[in-house]
Length: 250
Image 1: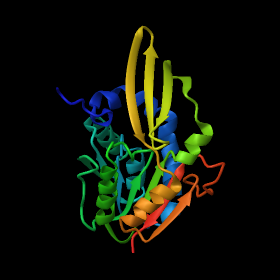
Image 2: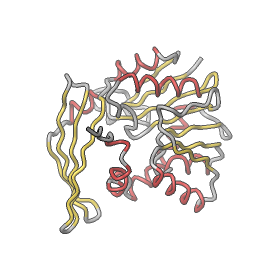
Image 3: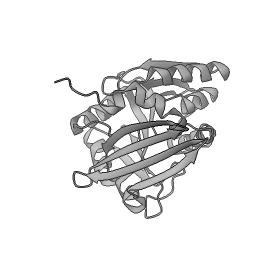
Image 4: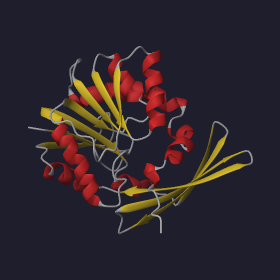
């Protein structure tokens, strides 16, 4: 029996969800998010930055415009093509690499690594997550810094809804969610409806609490891990909107 390709390795998934994941408003948000990232990390202009799971390059382009040397890595070629086009429009120089995050590693090549927009925890085997963190740690130079931003388990527990729907630019998006494996995994189905067209897509990912992900980062070698509730460095408390971790290598 042929093994089904995981959802995150299916080019169709990323193509069909493009208008949902990256509306114009989200592109505009990247400008402020980059300012927040720089405040969190203290990286100086000219630093070498890895945007791991860079998507269509919204943060990579902004960083390059500010004088950073940027490498964007993603496994979805259509997204990298869009990132390259955006870089050309903005006259920004970016290196773009099509690679799986479990395989990309450049020993002591980067001053900073960013992994944003819940781009971590897709793999069924938790050892793969550890491999990714190990690759990041090895790729950072001494004193390098990692910023991760994702939907934390505590935040999801507070706002969880099993069903939801919204309309975006004429596209009706229906979402169904189910928490499984003792609150360590969430399974979702997205239904996208436009006119007479209907597309059903399944996705799932691991859920990490702040303590669990902090422990993983430390186990992989990071000396200091700070936790925040958003990219603006708000506390990770009952009002947090996201789980943000800033991890530093000795």
